Image (cartoon, rainbow, N blue to C red; front, side, top):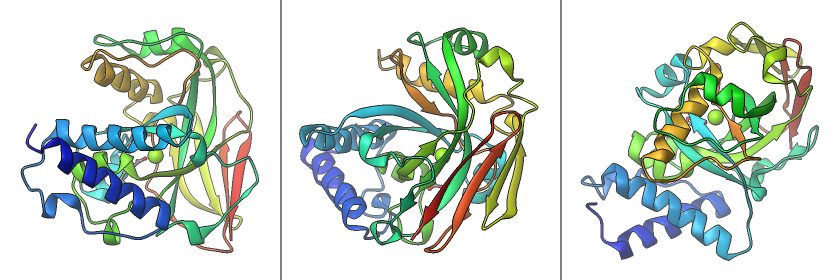
Length: 262
Ligand code: 0L1
Ligand code: MG
């Protein structure tokens, strides 16, 4: 690791304050160009520790930048991983207050809920499907704390991969009830389709993103616990939203889920 422990703690406090106060910041690698991947995940872990110390509960995990559309949009080449806590949860159909966010965007995702723990290395799509209880549609609201979404991957990881809010809903299916590669995905804003995709847009199969997450955690001796909800990453580019917008995600055979912004 390149950063001292107190620098990691300061950066975690700074980024979390940006999130809680809806204030943007230049990317942290501007001031810390030597920051390495371990530092980036250590800052993310320190943000989680701050939230847990205040009574937050982990409700799941996320993979981000898992589709070529998203990678192209953000000019990056690799997926990233983050955590989901209860303060991010939005009930289906509820309204998100944009005053609590900086520059929100929405992403259409497939969510997995596990019945068994998953541990890498060597985790693959088959292991993910065998460990999955059900899958369902989900919308992630991302809100990078970096000014004008200008960042590099290490800064994004430290910022918990822009996680801000999410909603899941629609029709939960057992993994054998749906072909997650060919399933059609339509994201609507104010009644008009704004992004179209298929499950295969996410690394060829959304379960591949979950396997990557298990392998990533496995390298640190960790696992994805049974019961976890995992957002597998946006199947399309992210779509900017503002107060007054209503967003609906329709996934073929899996119904729809939506939220509003005020
Ligand atoms: O969920 C995601 O794809 C997070 C991506 C992080 C970068 C961004 O803010 O777009
Ligand atoms: Mg996402």
